[in-house]
Image 1: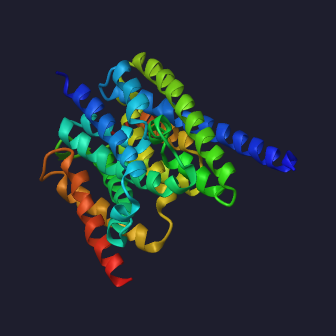
Image 2: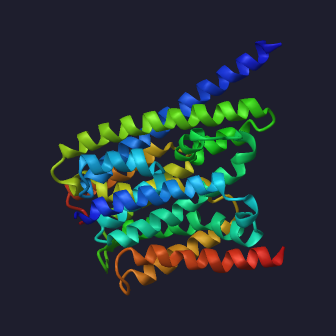
Length: 227
Length: 105
């Protein structure tokens, strides 16, 4: 019986490694941008090991690199990380975790592992396999890539002449892009962008990003009220 | 203590706590439609604001420099479905070239 389930499993494993390699590529840009934003090699690596969530990591180094304070960086990173908690919540039914496995699974509950698990939800065992394989693969490649990027960037003396300051905005845009799935979401993103540009000269660095959450709250409440 | 270390450690601890809470908190607390509806929008608005801040802000000042050209090129690359790393390197390259030739700051 298990010929086809074996081959499905190896397909999932191959995909998991592919996803890990692809994410690893942007782990290189994270390591590089962290170092050029003034973070040390060790700080960049601890972020990849401990925080382990791309958008939050880019936010921490981006905000502090642009002169924002630690509190603004922590708050932004954490608000971006709420979604991982919700992923864990919706995966719990499939993963059926107990004991120490809960700790490990929590650490690798991110966009990629969740997406791969959900994509195989018709087969619970395969769905679990997809979660672990993708999470571990991304974790390993992401951390190796961070080290490579951080070491590479530490050789660069003038990050601006390499255009690395322009790379940070592009990185956030590339993270945002696949989420702009419909017209309403595109308008919401646009209003957050407008609010940010208005607030930049008025409030301290880091706060324009936090203020954007107000838009999520207002629209979120309206959306759920109309349902 | 270096404020960067404070941010690195605190954000890591909170990130883990958030992920872990999803595994231990009963679903009914977080699966209310209001909460779900708000939290699904949080990454959208924050990433959009981060794009703007990283492109136009220098501290508390609005700056119009080579980063904008980088961002426009990133948009073009994304429209052509370029992968993440290509978008990032593309934006950096354009900004770098414009500065090298002294066309913009």
